[in-house]
Image (cartoon, rainbow, N blue to C red):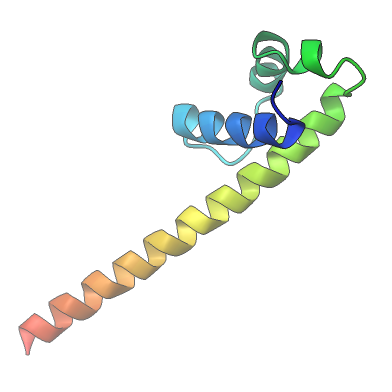
Length: 85
């Protein structure tokens, strides 16, 4: 049986890959909760609490990706400016 934290990370990663969005869709997470065994393996787990955990992980992942993108863009801009000199 997977840890709850593994389900959270798996849901956040899968959602981000499928949608590219940082705001979690209620229907999507409810389907994930039921279809991926979270409900079966953790019958006491509240869907709303699970959704909150996934949204937090999704926000962290999204912020990390945005930061990496900005750093890469800055690097590219510096390289282009350097070549123009």
